[in-house]
Each structure stands twice: as structure tokens, then as C-alpha cells.
Length: 278
Image 1 (cartoon, rainbow, N blue to C red):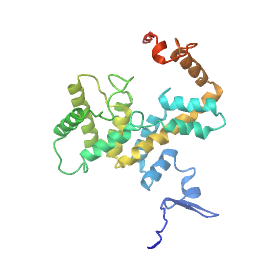
Image 2: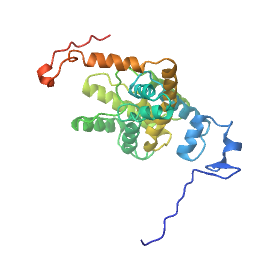
Image 3: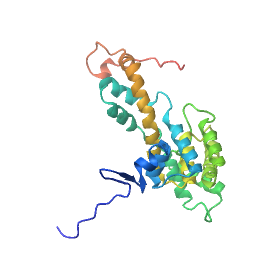
Image 4: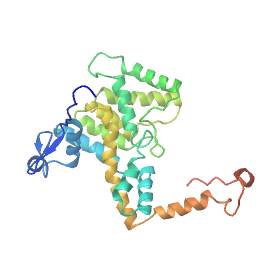
């Protein structure tokens, strides 16, 4: 083995018997009781505490993603509670593992798309309308989904989006990334001839770019926020269980027509009725 041993280093935090330092701040004296959880998250991501405008905006992004009801991530958490009620950390982890390109993690895809389209929002760049058209057309030609657009429930508008954009404008974060995202949505709706509103994750990805946050951090913002909500769902599952009912009802419906029959699926297949929408 040759060469010098690499030096191990972290600039985030250190501790001694008397002190804990976090990015140059004394945890006990400077942070506990003085900053909120969102500001602490901003410090961990950027290495500095937010100013007043950044604090309002970053906390708004986090609050937006804490909760959205019974969705795949909360179901995963509740199902894990049903099987391992003693393991809160496992239940929360199970829910967080489901945050990807479809749910919550599309913040990352949006921010990456926008930051690559406008590496420097202050530099000379193609007209935003033409840039939006090119982005939409390239995604359509490649049959790729545009991140941050559309929602299965919130149509024709995601109510979280105008609220976030209003806060961004008030706090001085309205800019070219948000404008480009709006133009992408308009172009996509014309091309695909259906409503494709900017969803909350699309808005958050655009605002994160306006704030100068790296796109690689955006999924982490969603993880931070949703973890809080998942703790709530885990606790409610302990008090007011629904996972076991979901399990038994799913089992009953999914296996209806096959119970008591043995043999190959092809030999015993039966037609099932499509449930009516409610």
C-alpha cells in the first residue's frame, strides 16, 4: 500500500465533554432555544443560518411537504407499525424509502431540470419562452415525464403552488426559474391538451433554485419534511389502527374468485368487475 493516508475531515460539527460545535455555532449557547427546526435544517444544508427572508421561505417549503394524507409513504409507515409496533424508526424509514421520482422526490427532478437549463440566471440566456418550448418538446420526443407537473387530485390547479409563489414573491425570491417553470407548464398543457398544473414539488424545486440551493439537496428537503408527518401517522396508527383493516380488505378483494381454487392461474382465472369510482 503506497501513498499518504487521506486526512479524515468534516466541517459540520464536533463535540467535547463541555461543548458541541455546529458550523462554528455553539449548539447550547447559540442554537438551542434560538433557532427553529427549519432554520437548523437550512444550516445543515448550506453551512450558515438563514436570514429573515430565507427563514420564512425555507420553513414554508418544509411545511408544504409534511402532510398529504393517506399516500404510499404513509401507508408504508402504518403497515410497518402494524408488524413492528415497537420500532418507530423502522416505520418512519419505511415511509421515507418510498420518496422517489413520483412522490416528493420530484422536487429534485424539477430543480435539476431548471438549474441545468439556466446555470446562471443572471447571465445571457435564450428567451425563456423558447427555452420552455425546447424543454417540453425534447421531453415529449424522448417520452420522458416532465417533473413537477400534474397531480392526480389537484386539478386544474394545485392550491399549494400559488401560495408558495406568493410567499416567494413577497420574500424576494420571484425570478427566472419560477417564470421558466410557469412557461414550461403552459407549453406542456398546450402540447398535451390536458391540465398539467405546476404541483407543489414543482413549485418547491423552482423556489429552491431561486434561493440558490443545490438541486441535490431538494429531495433531502422532502425527506426532512415528510419524516415529521410520518411520525404523526405512526403515532395515530398506534392509537387508531387502520393498517390491519387495509391489509384484510386488500387480501379479500385481490383474491376474490381464487380462494379455494388450486391449479395454474390460467386454468382458474375469472373475470373481475372493475369497482366504480367514488
